[in-house]
Image 1 (cartoon, rainbow, N blue to C red):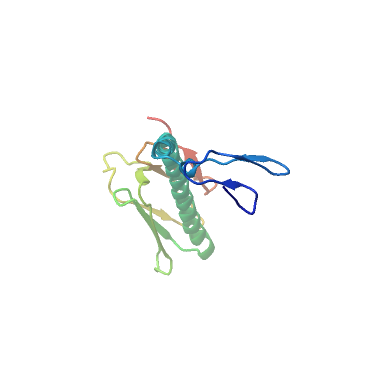
Image 2 (cartoon, helix red, strand yellow):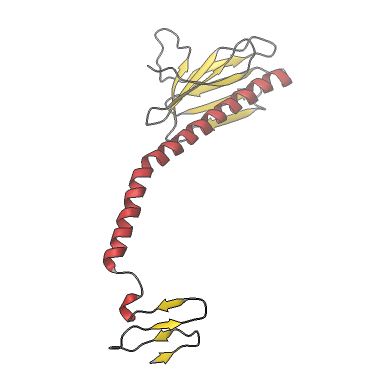
Length: 186
């Protein structure tokens, strides 16, 4: 029998396990096959981790989609703020173009010194632009003009994700401020 420098007994094949007395504790040391993890134990752990991952994935994916929708909504609010501020500050007419089919928005001043474009990335898309004129194609590009010192047009953009979450970004015609609302259920 050999004793290591730590006082733990190492044994060779065929010898029985021994207990080594250390001043503060007792250690039972098994054979060579006792160290490590068996294949069955490893498979059980992998199955448990896979089960936990499968249970938490839908909620994590929904959380990511909610964050993307919130980010896209903030992007639309910022776009409206910049365009409205440009019309007021520089006393220029600003044209807003909103395309639901491309999920894109663009703003341009009359002399083209101000040009901004925003593309809403998947999985969020522009569902509708309101108010919808009677008989108009809901997928057609809509144009709005913002006049300096004039009333702001009533504009609302509905954003949605593939799983059905919706946000409505509306420009208040009285205050001229865009705000984010929960889209009404249909």
